[in-house]
Length: 173
Image (cartoon, rainbow, N blue to C red; front, side, top):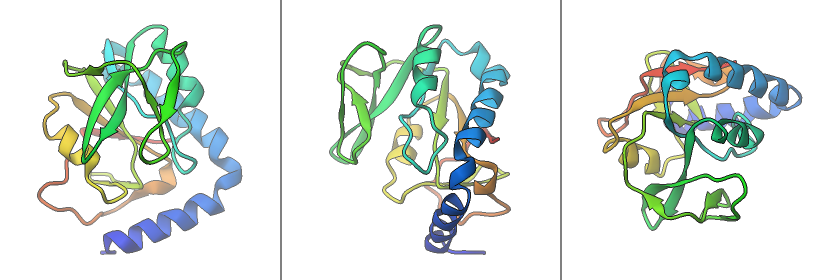
């Protein structure tokens, strides 16, 4: 099995090789997400403002916010929280250059968390960027967890540690 570092290196290479296809693959993955029974039934969802190597969620956020309450991650220090995404409200770049809502932090329940990752296994293991923000957050979140990625980001196995939070399901293009 590859190490986490080797997995991240391979995924970076694969994203570059598939760069031309990413918009089409993003649309396919988002269509699959919208058709997911758990996502369809959810009234409150945690999504993410995508980076260049992730399924592009930018327009999708606005679309979903018309029919569900959408929350996005907000990083404060070493902890991740969530704040409501409102399409007409200004956002600002957070600690890692990711857009974050400026609405008050939300500490209530959510139905579904849609989570990005560098890679996922079919069993639901997730390889993140190595800082543990999502793992610490999801450990305290009693919701259905969906990993969202490109199909080339799915591996047979990913190195996992006891604190790594597994996904209930992984959705790809």
